[in-house]
Amino acid sequence: MSRHPLWEALRGELHHLERLVSGPQEESSQPVAVDDLVREAALLCSLQGAPVAVEASRTTVVSRPTEVRRVVQNLLANAQRHGVGPIEVAVRSRASDVEISVTDNGPEISPTVAARIFDAGVTRDPARGGGLGLYVSRRLARDLHGDLTVPSGSGRATFALSLPGGGELDHPGSAGLRGLG
Image (cartoon, rainbow, N blue to C red):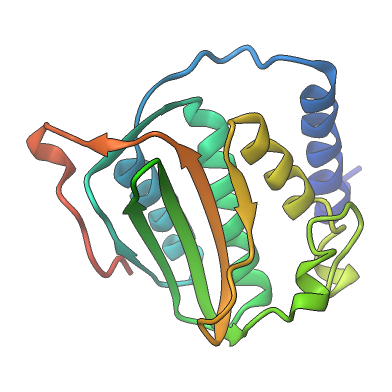
């Protein structure tokens, strides 16, 4: 018997949430080429029919790559599912952290909605999701000593993942790539 895809996604999110709540993750921190990780996630999203433009900055952080990838993939999936194309991802190295922002052309998220958008069960469209993705993503971001926020002022729907640290990569295969898809 085949299960409904929404049920399977919800089950996966609940399993992951259980792991988050139960304690430390098995994966150890290691250098993560943020641009490479973002390009891989953007390529997957593009292959699913949602073109993604990437603005990269040759940045690396010391973190858990599987968890960072999960947050980025979830933000891209949300932009694909709930947003208005095209999707843009920007990686910016700042003084004390690295910011990965995911933006689409949907309307800017109001402060009222932003105040509760990371709560478990909050969803714009229950038929398209159970409202756990952003909750889990923020928990992951904070577990990585970063955060997931909704910046205001762009006039468009934007989510920003910040991760501590960051530096420029020194290997030639990490040059920025623009305009995937």
